Image (cartoon, rainbow, N blue to C red; front, side, top):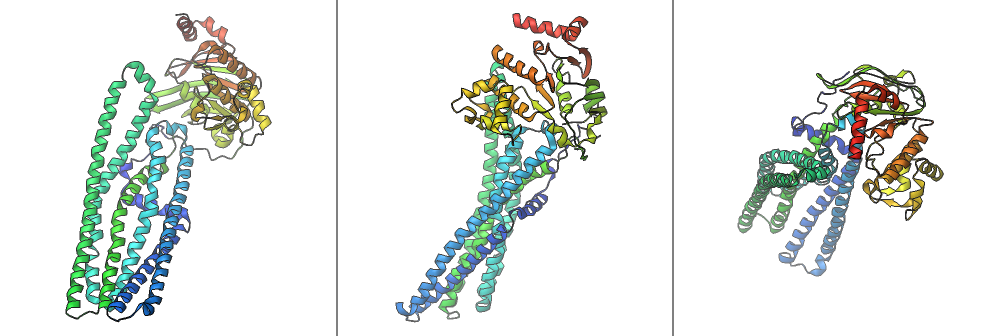
Length: 593
């Protein structure tokens, strides 16, 4: 078995820019033919731009030196107007294709990252900072839009358009073509020279932004505890210091970016000025005809424009590469435990057995030791114990998020590593202390337990959970729209909707983490009744902190230090006068205090 304590992800700093860029280019294929169409459309628009410059030079030469009137020049003027309109349409089409291409890549990459996180499982996710993951999935994915929509097309066009102009200019005016050829490499050279430093700074800033997002999310989640402990003012000062440091680092990146833009504009302007002076003297000396000289002068800014645009979009590349490093870290990560490759299906769970189970997150720190646990019929069962006793680890193991390092875990007499993981999860339901409800209708939230359920089945599950009465009193009944996290409902109402979701799934093993926590007595009684009804035909395991809620359990396992130190029903455990009795006494004293 792999060591769960082993580092399962690569450090983003260990993934260099070249690997990130290769990874980004590989995923360009997710957009299908859209990137190719984007480049073709942009190249065609560039070709029309060259034609437009040649026509303008021809019209100016005819009007000034050919003594042609409006009648003779009208066909050229109409042709130029047509090129202008078609080019405007192509530019608009190129932009739309570019953003559609980026949107397609973003959509599929976000889907792949979500699927990867699901495969990594909760045991891996518990080791990560959720703020950094959220930043990667949102800001990181969004940062790729400029990379795919701006930078990659700019790379292709910076190769096509200057070469096309150079191929046109060299045969008719090799001196001007030579100036273009010599000065053109200066722009990408200084772009890369300055951009390397900016890229390094940007990667540091991106990682800092992810850590800062994780820190802020942790603070928001613990805001109530901070206020109770009187530590909120101290944390405000900490946030202010972190924000100020991030501001200074961002300005450092911007200084380098502005220096890069200044260098690009300076060399492009200097090159165009050199070409203009050279053409001016040659026109004065009669070494060059006006039409050719004007055409070259009109094409010179367009020759450097793709290179300048590439320099501008180079910052999009830096942001994309920085974001890709975090994504590659996730995509290359391995789950704490390998998923079973078995295809053996699991029917309804009738028996559950743990034999000599041992699990440790670190080599010298066991979370579970020699756990013995057996359930062979439906009913209500309970796990109790002080904080840190190993209850959460045992629940993760029962849910098959982790696997015993020693001993065996059997369902219906078969070791779980011989069963298909999806099949196991199809028979399990898990409700934490604060169940997650999503933005959507009440019916939508219940239907998560079985998306194919009919309206009648959803209502039956709600009745079974004791939720039907308050749902009918909502403004639109089952079609009432809930806010994120179940905003608008009380704690007891949220708990009963979560129960209805589990009941709709008809999972043969239901695990609950203190389902009556934070509930008033009326709501607690209703939830308890719903659980006991469900336990008549299913296995229900409750992780209990309020011990009076498990008095009716058929068997209670008392954990301490990762071991089962007591087991039996409520009366048997009281007679033992052990940890359970002391915990129950402490709970009753707290209630009466």
